Image 1 (cartoon, rainbow, N blue to C red):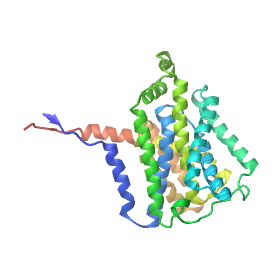
Image 2: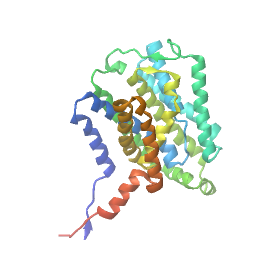
Image 3: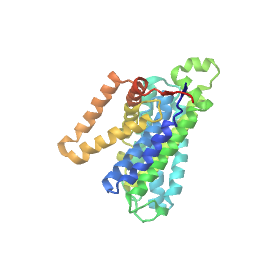
Image 4: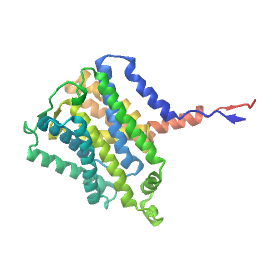
Length: 325
């Protein structure tokens, strides 16, 4: 008897996601997919350091905001192509992550989480005080159509750009988890003292992965800026973004590659439903539903949706043996 060798399920999953934008040309459908892909990308970047490395950050909005401001201001005020701006945003994310990491990685547990929030808030206050941009606190991004200006009339282009970003984050996560750095990171997350006693430079490993996470988040912030066409400190440095990145990964399954995608696929449409379709006085129900889902996941399925899928797979979908010829 020998077992059927199945193709990599992650690869199949990503291919299916790539086909989804072709199923309908309706703007709302494509817009929803763009948001799902984009927030899955952010959550995947957050998951690198907080899911695999167990360094729970609630200040990732700092990288998001810096990415949005670097791209937006360079384009709106100096006419620099958004593509260059996004690349510079990523570099800015690396620099900022190293600065924050140097200052906070000596702290443990919730002290680290609180310090990342403080860093993000400090940055928001600085940007607000300096009033960056030609229009004061808020900056409207010009809409000159064309690939060069990252402005398209058809939503599907944004959808596939968000999908490409997600692909890059998934590829990076997969590569890291299969590398020596990934093994060191997992060991650090499980027991930092034990990893250090075995010769792992845990501080250096956390900085490297934090820099990668910051790079991706800042790049996504630059794309988000060009997608929404407006930035202001209270919006792009809102702690709500950091919470969403974390919640999507927790609900989907922290420390897994597909978890942040599944969490985003569930919660982004749910959030849009309460905010756009119902709206008004019922908008807070969206945040209430976040809380209910998070509580249910933590109490009954601590590993998130991926843990539930794993349990179902073990019970019903084991690899089937086939007789040899």
